[in-house]
Image (cartoon, rainbow, N blue to C red; front, side):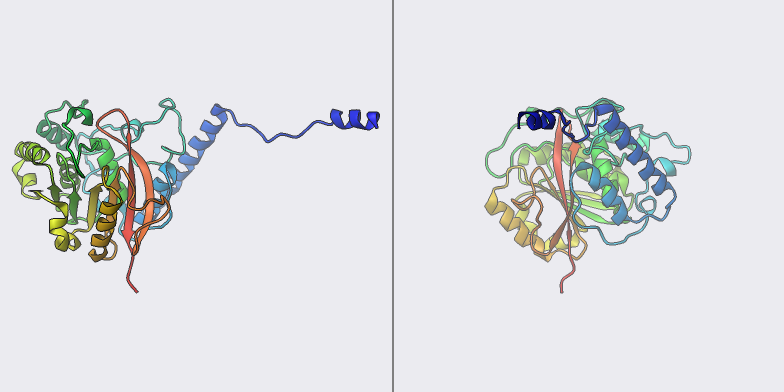
Length: 320
């Protein structure tokens, strides 16, 4: 018996293979390169595939979007369409912040879209918000906090907003409604990205509204004419929500009652409408969506501060 035990102890125990960081990083980079090669061979790629690509790298993708036109035909900006125009030179680190180095890749950042814009448009944005081309707005901690359901919300950086809009793949002329629009950054980037698009923001805080109004006054007049600011209760315009094709909602301080009220109000929006929640999802269960909606994806995006903000994208389903 002792000899059998000794023989058994001498048999090596198999272990699961272990990947070091270099091997895993190389594997992810290869996957990303193959993905880019497939995308280059499919110039007519539709937004459902684009959403799946960018969703699989930064969170989850549980529902594909309905087929739409190629991304390049929807956004009227981008490096491939610049025709010699000076463009921004954003990198992946401008879209999402990760712990690894610049050459590294992880499931949070692999496959993400980096959308560049004409440098003149970015300069207009920076002049309006009085930032340098390489700078950003002060972190949200420098903005006064407000009591109740609307307090200071971290806002996405310019590059992150451009990436998010590219991932949504809107058609020219689509309309954005931002509930809790803060200082209006998302409205401005939407207006810059879609030369025929319009954007409206509703902000409960008079302080944020006044700051946004002052900022908009420094934008080019042609852009100002397509952007609209309102100060008041976001639910006061609930009957008009159906006019928007995309709805952004800043949900950072919404409690369960507010989220339930929001979900009920969103039942009237049109089929295919995208609803993008910043900070927290519309349902307590991250993998679920309100009735009549599907969760397309969730992923982190860079803020104007030092971290990321969770973004949840839903799509209104067809009614039976």
